[in-house]
Image (cartoon, rainbow over all chains, first blue to last red; front, side, top):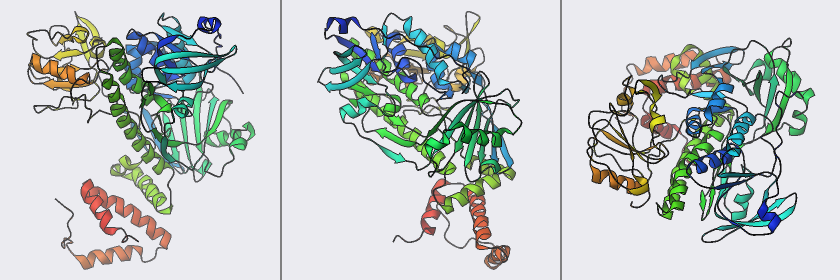
Length: 536
Length: 64
């Protein structure tokens, strides 16, 4: 197989603590250096925490794996200063086509709303994404990345966890005030704490193949239901960087995973899809099956779970890595606040409340897509085919066609950290919702609203703020429209229903905590306390 | 509004005739496919999720 990518080999270094045989207590240990673990390291360090990251390999992800990265994770990476390279290297796309048998039944435009810094989606091989984050992590003095470090046992105590870690030099012990397990769907840490990981397992197999070709296919997402070249199954074609294309073939439950991974089996399938005459090389292939599952609790005392270690979804909709990164966005500021002593330990419980809610929403969406793509009986296949057949002629049937509902953030509609509205509001910025971006100007220069939000709380106000709300380390940054920035396109007021005097309290993870039609210092202070888990 | 269960068809006999006539020469397979399309077309006309759920519940076989 061909390689468009040179895998870096990260040097294993024996740690001074292992050499000295000394058991050290670390504030935060992250297990796993995939997209979620690396985001955790960068986010925690950005919030001033020292982080040790343990990973059992010594390179980035093999194979392109996760491919589509959505707007919200990119906004998080932008806050962490690593999004530019991803956006430069990634492939932007917004057009999708749906085929049924031998016909295109319709095409769609993701129609991203104008006036956002970050695009709706980019496609990028996971190894590039990890490489960029590893480089950023290595140049950060607060992050200690340790390769070929495998956690072999974990014991929980009330105020810390004890880890045994295996390296090429043997096993050593370390302690951590907090452990954040980002060790993937087959998480060892999850087994070590005895957590349950339950859900629905799908009896189907899929072949994913990355091929390199210079063909003139447009940069679009193509999805086939029951195509002539692969009858009875589905198929997907998607572009990545370096002329690498992702192909996905549904194989059915009876397929033999070993056999199907062999190039002599894959190549005829690819030719049937893209045409006999198109030249290509196979770069990577894998046969997988999937489940939609979630851990029973994201928190086991001082051990916290994020990403695939906490929830697993089908790949339709790009909800895996994208959701995992948002777990970290939610956890980072809470963990930092509790470690600094600015918030009670119970704030960490809201991590489970909010992210389990989001995981359930993702699992629901991904299960529905899977049921559409893989009908479970003749009756559901009949309805599936009816929706597809009608969609060619009638617009009404198109919303029924489900080849994956692409990842968008789940508003924390029922979060205990939200202060309920006491007035009527238009638009989508209800408490618990991720703050919308908008173009603004600062001293005549073009900028973006999300860039102006503080690392802590922010008061976004559409009128003068008469007094400051002093809350020590939690004192909100004050951002007044018309004073601190110019709402040059009017989109901030539009998206936030920002009538004169309206005020939003925005959390450190850029989610709306509370909003009022006029400023009231006491109400702001109460809402901050509530968002810090102090009152309910 | 809840699901309408009092008579609402403009001309019940004519509707029934149109439906059965359309399937007179169809195989079971073809008729089932047609019924699936028909359900989706009519569901769009109803629109409201609550009414559709109620209709699904009423149409489902009695619990075994």
